[in-house]
Amino acid sequence: MIAVSNASPLIFLAKIGKIHLLEKIFEKILIPEKVYNEVVVKGKEKRFADAYPTSSLS
Image 1 (cartoon, one colour):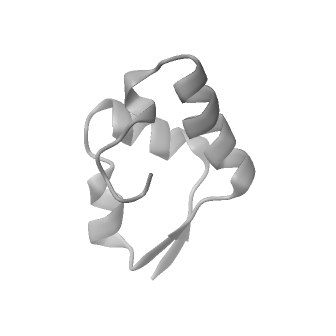
Image 2: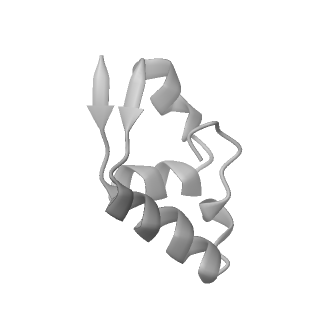
């Protein structure tokens, strides 16, 4: 199954260290560029620890 994610699930799963669950549930995860920028790029600019997940989703 393919999933398209918005920012909220990515942020909250990363905060609790469970972002890897998305890879277990879905065979493909699509993250729109604007969502990636909001979650990862802006998160890293603000030095949020959860912007650096250890999952291959990053």
